[in-house]
Image (tube, rainbow, N blue to C red; front, top):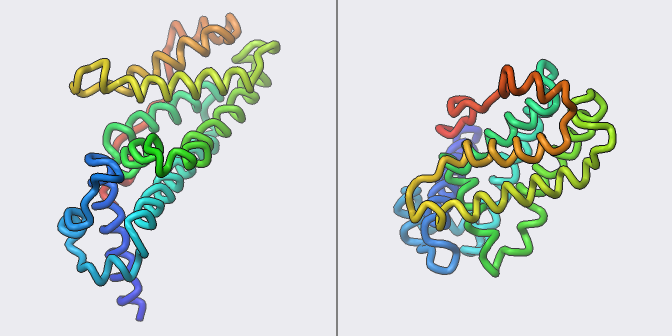
Length: 223
């Protein structure tokens, strides 16, 4: 029984992963269930055992992406060895890394800009990241990294919008060439932080730079 359940879990995960590749490349409307099946090596019966329709499968991809965003935010928020702004940089860096390498997160980005799933954008990864960003902004004010008069809500809105803009503009700006999202995201963060940071933190930052960054090996993308 346990072996059968594990086989079913692996099959479901393989279908979701293959669907993410297809949705990320073709979008929702043009995505082919046959190509998803070929990529997952699952049977049509197995797919319909786990998912009622293509929409149901797309929502499973979105839910998996949300789990990854939540895991990312939770891990970085638990880092007690770093100051809040370095934690924020680490989290933002991981999101950029996932957008470059994680097919699930790439698919979420593609799906939420389509009419069928646009309403999901506000409840997906961006909302999780925004909540974590606000928590870290408040911590940064309390720790004297951001000025006492800094507004955490304004900070969060500005950063969230700027990061989304960088991602959505990356492809047209680079004319199809690979964009260095990590560098672009770091640049956005630095511009916004510098507008609200205390002189003491800025002096340290100019001397040492960021103290944390994401590592590809830590993302578990082979699982």
